[in-house]
Picture 1: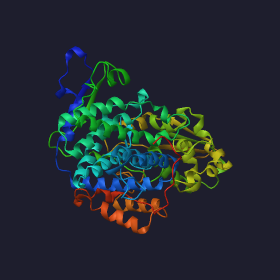
Picture 2: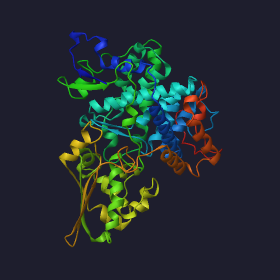
Picture 3: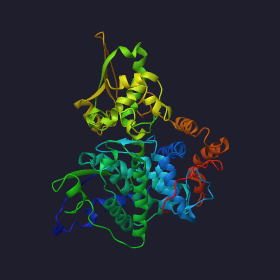
Length: 499
């Protein structure tokens, strides 16, 4: 792994492309180094994970809306749409739009947190869509997904977006473009132009994750995937892009990130070095913002020592700056304390999540967010007794690149009215690779069956799980079998739009 210095240069310097980050990213994507077996195994796990959460959300409004738009772009020899029959094919950028939205809607798939944060599983829908449309093999798909994860994770390790209020799809879109380029075996020059185009069009603000959070949170990664496919398409046709996209004096670093004096160190694999970044990522056992995962597990443990929840005076969660300011009271969002808030807002309120987990001792992606559950008077009382506080040590552990020390949880103090106190802490979720029970293949399969039970047939479930675990042996043109279909007539239809 090599650290690559990235800084802003005035136009008169005429920075060589070989010295540009986008060129180096493209070089990683163009390197056809073999994918290790453990990486291949994890890619299969994440394809299962994505399919699970996509099917669970398949008839939720954003997924229905995205699918409706996609089905307005039927294309012979296109890509498949989750939920629909494998015989139905649409233009690949629209398949990425529909499938990416379904995957993201429940906020229930994988995560990576470092200098910035991400859901690298969002790389899978556009790479898979192009693989289906261009009749690529399972091995091609594996190489493309491994590349998307590699670029995404390493950008997240090095360049912070959120402190500038830039949404995290700005790292996702170039990673998706690199993944598609690797899948197709494109030349470095073509991928270079696609990556630059993807960066240029994907910078948006974090207002999408502030206050009353709308359904755009589900659409944003799918939007990035659609943009990435279009960027690769333009580059393949010989079109160029704004350059240098990272280092230029009027580009993203200079004006949208750390500014003209910025210096970043971006890690990227050396030529011939395996792409292993997916192994640094982790999925969710519980449906909610990743920083809530360890705290949910901690709530399950602490509740065993509590006899009367009404005896609680207050609860203080000592945690990282990110948890405090994004899903905690440090966000200063009154919506996070509102029983009538949207599901998207409640899953970004650790105060709500901790209260319900503490009371119930379980977490369910549907019932734990139900309006009646959120409005329960005793829950509201407990919820409003919870506050978060930034702890510098938890912030340091959140940002460290030492994977053995990295932490996303916190220390919880529960104060009782009689003056007694209950204190405990948890650094990582049980399902984390360093947790009490790291997720293995059987856990991904269990999650898939739990989320798809009653939505798809047992026959379809068994068929998908069998074929996906045989991914490296799937030949060219066989990737439509990775689609998961609902029984005929089970898909909701969207309201009419333009398409």
